[in-house]
Length: 352
Image (cartoon, rainbow, N blue to C red; front, side, top):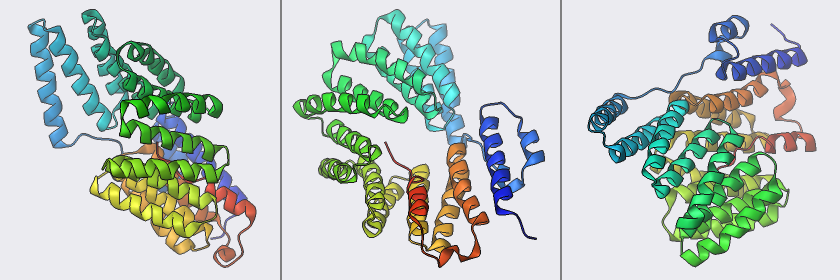
């Protein structure tokens, strides 16, 4: 059977749009399955492992006892633990609920440090949910508290606010916050914070199209993370360095950076980050015309996203695989145009 490529693209785009709406509750899953092929609607949801279920049951039992004892500090601490467990298992709405209840108790206790910490957690959870303005509001409240309590935590919160602003396209404001935070971290001797801000500044310059500056900042941040033996940070910034190299046309160095990032994420057992890096490697191989290899990387990425129940990741990986479904047979051997390259580079996934 032969398909009209434009019609197929339109159909696939409609399916992906409906799937995205279904994640927000606008369409029922059954309605989507009636319209779209099974391959495009096969999503696995986040779920708790038996170990997670046992931990959650223990925490809820502890919370009930603290409520019976009218022990407000114990209630607040337990709610934070429940929120963190919900967050790490991608149950973000439940995480916000738990964090918010803990925040209300910390306000009754007038524990400003605990309040600030929970406001940051709530902001980070909102970011995972794609609710940038709610995240920014939470971070702003945390910032006011940290300014009175802890300069290093103040600077870290500024970095998180800059991340939100970047996601909203407000790069100048993001750069201003990052540059304010840089000397604070340096004075405090906070290597992790310093490296994170260097990474953030690199992201701003990359978004502005200045690949040389972004590579410079990513390289500085990488050195700091490496010296501090911060493998998680090192893996994230290596991924970003790979993106910058790829966008600058150096695909060999891009693949080298992605390989190193992938090895570290495997040591850390961070499955969703592994999937993002595999997707980036697929983009690079697609860029240089090795589409069979690219397809393999996209398929591996999708498999991991499904195992993790990461819906946004699954959609991204499916989009890449669907591109192959409509490309003309001669694509692999023909010279890629500038537009082809730009479109491929736009699909690279950055780490924060």
